[in-house]
Amino acid sequence: MAATGNGPPGGPLTGVRVVELAGIGPGPFAAMLLADLGADVVRVDRPGGAGLAIDPAYDLTNRNKRSVMVDLKADGGAQRVLDLVERTDILIEGYRPGVAERLGVGPQDCHARNPQLVYGRMTGWGQAGPLAQRAGHDIAYIAITGTLGMIGKPDEAPAVPANLVGDYAGGSLYLVVGVLAALQHARTEGGRGQVVDAAIVDGAAHLATMIHGMMAAGGWQDRRGSNLLDGGCPFYGNYETADGAYMAVGPLEQAFYDEFIELLGIRDEVPTRKDFARWGELRAAVAARFRTKTRDAWTAVFEGSDACVAPVLSLREAPAHPHLAARGTFTEHGGITQPAPAPRFSATPGSVRRPPAQPGADTEDVARDWDVPGIRADQEGAR
Image (cartoon, rainbow, N blue to C red; front, side, top):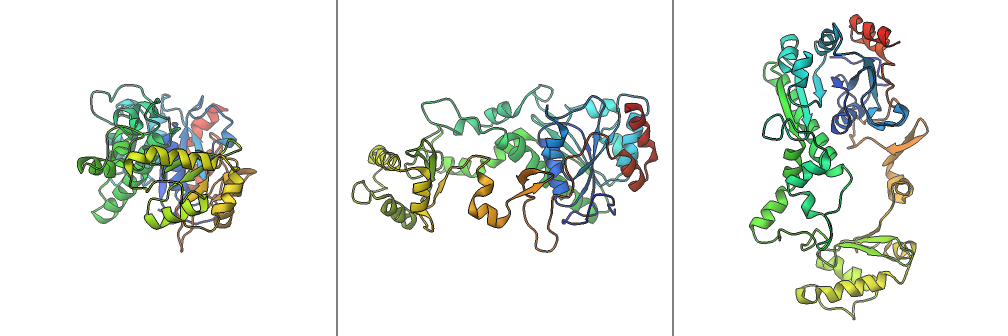
């Protein structure tokens, strides 16, 4: 399907159409990623709104999208969405199980109109199981998978990793992989669409696959802050500097470690790294040394080395880091500094083409481009 009206063409998904039923969290982020890669994403907003409690102009998860306004609970609302579904490749919804069916836009209704449709379902608990109908948020989903329990110091409560591990890593990214795999299948196996059940609990558990293998092999202890990669190791963690900032340290390989202790200035003062019984002594020596200089001073010391040491930057500081600036990891669009689309493609690069979609603002354009005049009715009613 050829997408039109969504800014300059670009990205490997140019020509792919996506309908996103408005929600919050992982669904909108997944749709943003598809839009960043060139898909023509139409977000179906509802009167009264559904999203973050911020000005929609700053909701970056709605960038590169267009928005139409449809009241699914009103007469004819479901029919208007199904008219869009008939012309799309992928649909994304994040309702509790059964809600889309009650609204008349569940998989059966949609596949009756478009058998090739990839129907992506984004939930925390999944479509089935004892908790499927329960409310929840990121922290609960990662809690029961064991993922949350791995993060933090051993003598403190688990550290909350914002909503990155559950909503976005275990949720959004698995949904995107799922719908793109299903789209490939639909295009190569006689046009058969299917339902993708992306549950945050499944994705968050899957992220820890390597850890489960290490635990089975006896190389990982089932408690936080006690292992090579969770802060238990004195040469894999964060250390405070003289100005109250932090440096991240990770020289796991021997050659990198040798360079690290040489530049830190403690080579002749500490036990060998394989003397596990003296790891506490090693940690104390590293910590004491880092507290003698500021973060910027230590950054200069390790500049250009293979010691695997980096300054811990804030969100506002990160865009100015020389490496990220050189790569264009962040970009500015509409006066907002924001992460640029990722990953990168040599022939079909993605880009930020449009600011965050305003609810219902693109109804006329979508009605014209997708040839769905019926969706104008809800927009008129919203006015």
